[in-house]
Image (cartoon, rainbow, N blue to C red; front, side):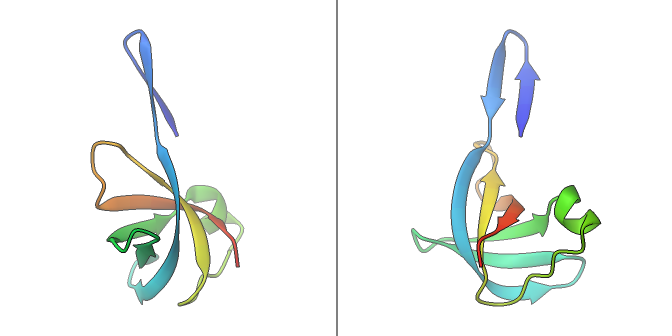
Length: 78
């Protein structure tokens, strides 16, 4: 995720985590390697291709540097 702001660019932070619980509305609780838990939702391409996620899956996520409590799941690692 890249957002153009003025003359600079803001980039998302890419992190990995493990899904700890499945919530309604294609949202998930994901525990990061640092021990923090975030609320994450599936990105558009994963939703379009019907990628299924279950508890215990490792995922790659994009997090905004401004709100570190939410993330967008971009890739399932297994």
